[in-house]
Image (cartoon, rainbow, N blue to C red; front, side, top):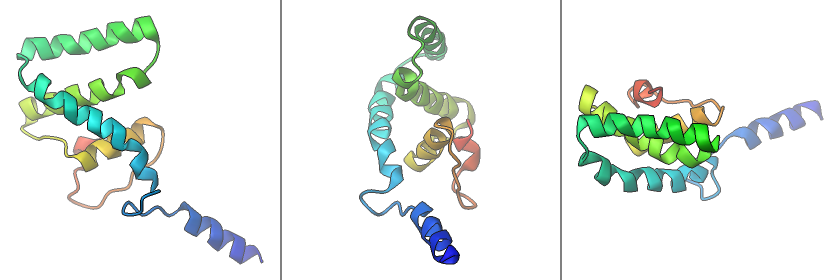
Length: 119
């Protein structure tokens, strides 16, 4: 009996990203928001992009709500990474970052961009 409960718990923890009710799908609306912001951020100068981070800090001090700023913060980070490193975060890397941002553990295979996930 003990083993069956343990195995059930183990299998319940496994998530398949290809199943509709997968835990990863909860991040898709944020990914869509981040992707929608990308075009506008590409038109900004480096100084304007840098000022966006200061605007986010100011908005956080006023609102004290990080959730409202998440999509914009990730979009700015993606653009800054592309400009400075020449590397653009793909959606899977954004999902990894959002998972870490929510206090959970993200596991990725070799070559999937863990370094970008951590930025």
